[in-house]
Length: 208
Image (cartoon, rainbow, N blue to C red):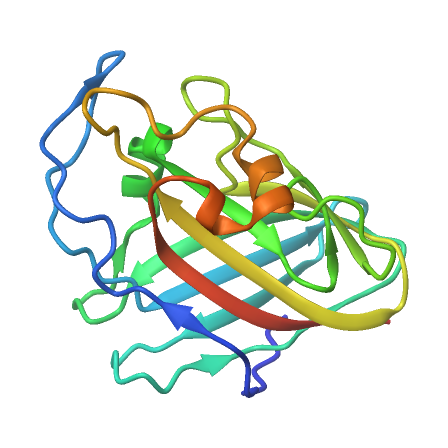
């Protein structure tokens, strides 16, 4: 079920994402060489774990003109959802799925889930939260990735739900993606961690 309702939300999409990557080999995984990957569409799929019913919510700027259409996220109270993300470049024909590149470079990327509606690793305790986030996947080093997640609705109400994809390639041969980054964001914001945002978008989320 897809509910398309444009909203005036605070939205930032960094289009020059995942800048030049020189073919690294991490534990036998070759990274794709790519330059200034364009990301025009973010798709969130919420699957009710009990019933398998799917709810799909999209942020889309397919013409890359700064006028996105954003779905409000509408969820049911007391439900545990498995949440997957898909990232597209719809300037290509056919649309290019960027998600496999993020998965391939999982040791350089991490999604963070913040906002007034959220309690989770990247927010810490939030008495006003209507959803609780937990990571449901890890990268090759056992650190959180965030392409797959668990969202539990815990109260009726509304708030902001912000999705940030951080790109953190190694610097001077040292890993930038390390343990505890979500907790660092909760304590000190995104300026407290390395790397740069590939995507940061804010949805309006309501639990009924």
